[in-house]
Length: 253
Image 1: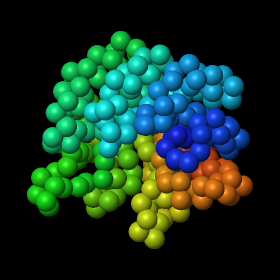
Image 2 (image 1 turned 60 degrees about the horizontal axis):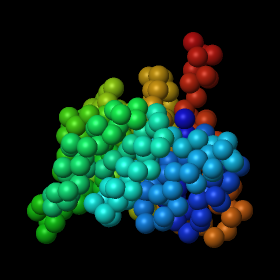
Image 3 (image 1 turned 90 degrees about the vertical axis):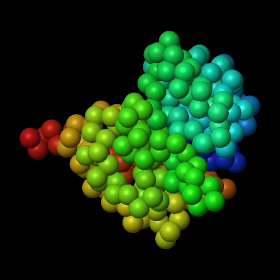
Image 4 (image 1 turned 180 degrees about the vertical axis):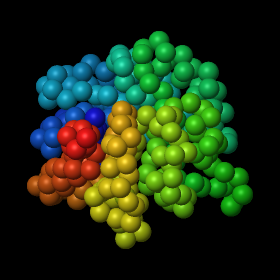
């Protein structure tokens, strides 16, 4: 399943995002809970699902406002079932979020039949010494539980995305698709220095059964020029279908 992240078009309203994603051929939506109050409104989100026949299959939490958004995140996701919660690891001083992530988030996921995945972020440090995020490398992430692998975040730490498949094995259940183009992170997956084509092809051969979310910048989609934005979204869907083609592999066999 290929999802479109609502954060990809930060200057668009949610309804227009649903409309564009549906027209482009995405299978569903991932909602990023942020300061936009529409993302806190389960009734409105369900209305958009029904109106565009496009399910919300994943939720994530804005990493810069995680502690202030915990309450609205819980209130929103509990109105949905069988979704994936892609949650980033905690910063060293985010004590409230650390405790919530360890004690509450797993209970929330279990109660509402969600899949809880721990997501890597770009490697950063405080004063060049203290890691900004705990448990952010691949070995630490898989020790936490299931993993949402962010390809650009991984690459920015000079890690090999192909090797990640072997390291994570059965723990990888969700993937954020993007690329790095001309040193610009979170570019469209079909253009850049990362071997996303080989990555998708290998996953298809291995029978990967998790989901994907396209997580890119509004600039990469040329937000503001909707004809071009829609075209780029359609090209991304076609790219995904070309290289993550499990039906094609079955025919070959």
